[in-house]
Amino acid sequence: MNTLEKLKMLISEAMPEIDISSVTENTTLQNDLGLDSLAIMMISIVVEDEFSFEFEGNISFETVGELCDYIEKHNN
Amino acid sequence: MIYNTNEAQREYFYSMLTEEERKLLKYIPTVSGLLDFASEQYSELPAISDGKITYSYKELAERVAVRRGYLKSLGLNYGDRVAVFAPNTTDSMELYLAIVTGGFVSVMLPTQLDTVTLSALCKKFRISALFYDRSFEETACCAFEKAYPTDYIQAEPTPSPEITAETVCSICLTGGTTGSPKGAVLSHGAIMRGAFNGCFISGGVLYQKQIAILPLSHIFGLVKGFLSSVYTGGLIFECRDVKQAFGLIPILQPTTLVLVPGMAEIIVNLTKLKGKAYSQSLKTMIIGAAPVPPKLMKAIDTLGIKVLAGYGLTEGANLTAGNKEVMKNPDSMGMIYPEQQYKVVNGELRIKGDNLMNGYWDDDEATKQAFDEDGWLRTGDLVKFDENGYIYITGRIKNLIILSNGENVSPEELEEIFYKSDIVKDCLVSEAELNGKQVIGIEFLPEASAVKDMDETELYNSFRHLVNETNKNLPSYKQIAKINIRKEDFKRTNSMKISRKQD
Image: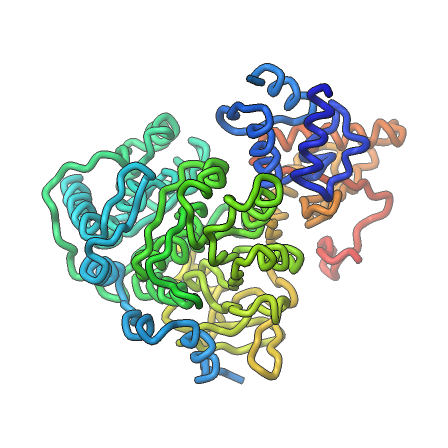
């Protein structure tokens, strides 16, 4: 499973009400998925847990693709 | 009709306490009195902790006395405003107590502020000293000359000067429709009424453990989170980072948490995903600052955690009404806390009591508008009461958008930004829904002459670009998530202003 698919699965687990079927790398977290700061925090907690790393500083990704890139760089 | 909180309402709250708690917990009119009470009553019990070092109530009082000495050594005078720009560390909690028991006035500032805003607020409140956490050193020192780190604690212990219920205690920031936050000036008596109301918790309020998740710059975090914990001999763990705090729940095992609904939702989700350790130590969740969705209440109840929901406002030192039976009566905000008078005028709740602010800092006009001609605080909330005295909030007079994470967004403030663009004739910011989530939406009426050569796609892309560019300069909670472009004019009021009710 590639990072995008894994991330989609995690988003769906963390936020079951979100429809992830049409999520692509260009999907924006806030504008398209409607995630607020606390929802993004929830997703970051499960991502950290799944990929065994910790985000540095504020989480300020615009798109799902940017988040995937960060995960791939920091995945232990 | 004017109502005083009656015996039934008083009993609604006092019945939550055991006999021992009722005897012990009496209203104390000053924070200095609270600290004296806690250091004597809870002396050796743990009070605050950073997770490594824990200080007892006696030690806390001693450290606060030293910090008072340090504040005095800076040449500060009685009544001077002292700001704290730091996360909820043990240092900032001690400093808060030192400032207000030293006869100074605290201004707790949110750590999201940038240098420009921080500097503007220091000027607005005529701050005499700004204390900063070292992780915010650069922002603080660029914003204000008289800036000091919060972790410096070396001076002669100094006793509190004389402080009464009327002495000004804290200026608490509150959202305003003008775009610039106002400062509610609260006396010791008001702050302590809020803290005392926060003690009404059933199932054992004494000696609870909590993590200070909500910032002290928020009245709910300051009064209900921190001061009510001191009132009841609780242990409060510092919280440098909200995300980290959730991960610490299995380790620190808090028994109670004071939260906004979005945070409670995270705990519920974490428990589902990662196991019971994320909630099993919790007996109570006190949720406020925004309405609690019934679905969330049910999910928390399923975890065996009692939910207490409350209604309050910064101008009334936090708690005005509280609901101890959210599962039985989920739509209500419960009953009005004791020692308040209330009346309903044209559907709006107005209150009086020793919990009210003196007024807004340096803003006579806003203060005049906040109170009616007889000195009642206009809450701006439309309410109704049922035959048993339960209160229901039915709407808001104010236009503020209250998000599920507790943040307040002023629509006018955002609209002002978009009005600067050539392609915008008019716009309206409001609460919207996207994928079942509450978000901020905007409707545009394009400036016909500026968009006349654009097709539908170009038009949409231009507004999308405008919103994206604007969002880059906004904190995440203020960002616009939903766009609608109108072909017809907005509904307007008689004075041709856009009506905020477009349905």
